[in-house]
Image (cartoon, rainbow, N blue to C red):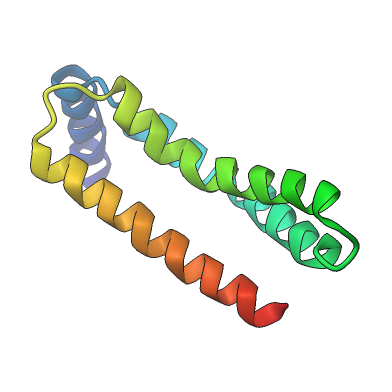
Amino acid sequence: MLIRKIIGWSRQMSEKHGVNPWIFGLLYFGTIPTYVYGIARFVASYKAGWGESIFWFLVGFVSFLAPYLYIMVWGHNLSRRFYSLVCGWMTIAAIVAIIKVIRQL
């Protein structure tokens, strides 16, 4: 019963908004390792110099943004409120991540 509701909901999201929740989930959970590795390497290489640390920061940053960019680029018929919530969530999560990284330095 629950599985059928989830499958029906995902089909509805795909048809109505052009966003496949399975692809979003794959991007969301699939980019966690590259995000963690990129940020860990950024923190480790920060003291060595900016050349290498910028690369690892970008790896972590792109990994963080990938699932949300999927929604922003391929989603349609989404309300402004939804876009505001996604942008707000991305901003808050990025600020928290930056604060955690700064504390580790």
